[in-house]
Image (cartoon, rainbow, N blue to C red; front, side, top):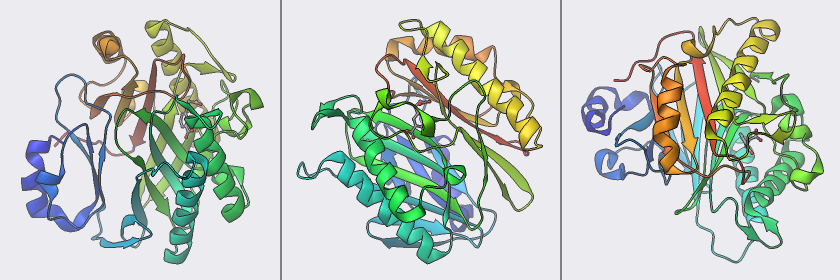
Length: 329
Ligand code: 3EB
């Protein structure tokens, strides 16, 4: 919702807010007195929008904090958020592993052991430190934590995004549930958890999408999706080509969901919300123009400047589908 509406919305619905996320904007002013998890992610909004991502629950929620993880929970859903300042002492794999282990321990203790959807924002994602790209260090640490805590059950991997920021802390925020969601992979793409070693010593631990039922609503969480076919990125240097390949990937995933999960999400035009991460801000107008021909431009869509985890990738799109329409408030 537009940041300008947040204050009045909070007046009537503060009890039902799971979390608020700002992108490239200061949201603490608008939401300073709230007990819910707040994140400010340094992926600046392109196109002069001033929106916040607001997660709500139909049931009232309680709030808490443990090991730096701020959380909110209803009977059914758990939302957590952690920001970690890198002191420069521990390498990113160690920091990421600790963060994920703390998340799993908290989820276990609270009775919501299944991660459904995770957002990871890493400063300088493509920078090489300690002999490895920071994204690959992150993957290493995340993999280690999942191996230690969850004995690495592939079908339980959450949907995810991992995006580079240019300032700020390592930030992770997530949705978790008491029961497992349903994993949906994409037949056009090798599962990320099976990527070959050339992309890093440990593969990225996420599912292409997770379908979850909350009450009688079905939500499909589509992971960050890029111009990757098989395990290879394609259309290097060609934004339009990458956009079209990314959309083919999302269409293929929706089609596969229909066959394997018995949920009819329709096609691109039926998606409920979208975040479009763009590496080079100057590509924004071209991407937006092309995308608006393919999606419902009334759905909440954020265009954000963010770095993608492979150097040649120029954009990445994440989306949700709900069997109930979301409106920009
Ligand atoms: C890809 O398909 C693109 O490491 O959590 C997308 C979504 C990507 C999530 C992650 C990485 C992640 O490999 C990159």
